[in-house]
Amino acid sequence: MSEERKATLTVDGKSVDFPVMKGTHGNDVIDIRTLGGKTGYFTYDSGFLSTASCQSHITFIDGDKGELLYRGYPIEQLAEKCNFLDVAYLLRNGELPNAAQKADFEKTIRRHTLVHDQLTRFYNGFRRDAHPMAVIVGVAGALSAFYHQGMNYSLVEHRDVCFQRIIAKIPTIISLAYRYTTGLPFMYARNDLDYAANFMYMMFGVPCEEYKVNPVLSRALDIIFILHADHEQNASTSTVRLAGSSGANPFACVAAGISCLWGPAHGGANEACLRMLEEIGDVSRVGEYINRSKDKNDSFKLMGFGHRVYKNFDPRAKLMGKVCADVLAELGLENDRLFKLAQKLEKIALEDDYFIEKKLYPNVDFYSGIVQKALGIPTSMFTCIFALARTAGWLAQWEEMITDPEYKIGRPRQLYVGAARRNVPDISKR
Ligand code: SDX
Image (cartoon, rainbow, N blue to C red; front, side, top):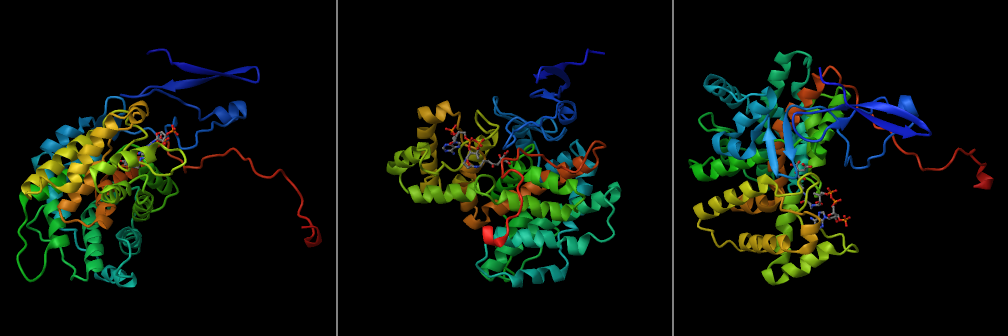
């Protein structure tokens, strides 16, 4: 048995040891759960730059190497050899499905795509020009009103049903949000199409004629789903875990995750990146925007660049760039203006001393907007696509949390810097 490693903290003349925990890959951690009780001190780590919130078996990122593993498998191999449902199954179960498990899982998902018909009436409550993320936050949360009754999430069978329902219905919910904003009639999934093809059918099909799925484009979308499926304890996943730690049901937790993902610093960056490229407009203006992104007095940031963990290339960005090129080639858009502009922007930024010094590289959002636009997905829907895919990761992380024997309700402490204790003055003295 190797000797337990310890970290010693000396404070107020007193030394206290804390155990060091070692993972499979990545940084070791100091277990400071007893710090408050032993020393009367808390740690301070706003933004959680150096804080592990949990132990997880699901995803690992090596930010220095630019490596992303789902259950130990490199994202590049999963994107090449698997489809999104294989990955959703892997994230939850820890292993890829064999042929029989794959067939059974895909059949089950195909048979859960419909939503309760009353749920479709929720859409009528929204303005037609509502942002689709506002719509899906509401409708995803409303799933609790239809599918949560009688569920006991301590039973794996109930968690199975819940996972299948949400994975199957989230594409339906998102496509309906798009259809509602366009005034097009709602389309329902077809049981003869695979997951990504079905989503494209529900988004772009019309009841008046047969919809022909382009296999190159639906596979590209399937890979986009794979690239966005999970990513350790990012902001939205941490939101899902924190919401779930109170015992909130998984439908409500997914709605919380969607809310957090909407932010432009997180999942909203793909939409913001495309709008930024359209605003830049021409390669002659790239320098102006790069200078703005370096100006501390300017809040502008280069959307699609930088990452809390990756201090090398985001491997998803490389794969997304290839998917983008394949889709544009399939559509005869090799000379797409925005794609060319993005490539020039990437080249210039990567040669800029500021970006080199700060280790700012393109992230998953840099090319995803261009490829989604080429697929016909409107800019306002980009983060919905991210949410569709990340739902698989959120559910796997939620289940890992609620089945962890050590899990407790998440309740961070604080450094209070407000007013000292004082008495309420009479109104005449205020
Ligand atoms: C996602 O966490 C995840 O895993 C998220 C995600 C996932 O799959 O879940 O990967 C998805 O959210 C990708 C990131 C998408 N967001 C963007 O593309 C928005 C633009 N990027 C930045 O907002 C920023 O890079 C963040 C939010 C992504 C990361 O921010 P951090 O880790 O808090 O880093 P920081 O803001 O402290 O930046 C460090 C330095 C700062 O300069 P200094 O204060 O040290 O002088 O780098 C600068 C920043 O000003 N910087 C940028 C920049 N990003 C960081 N400068 C210009 N342009 C940028 N894009």
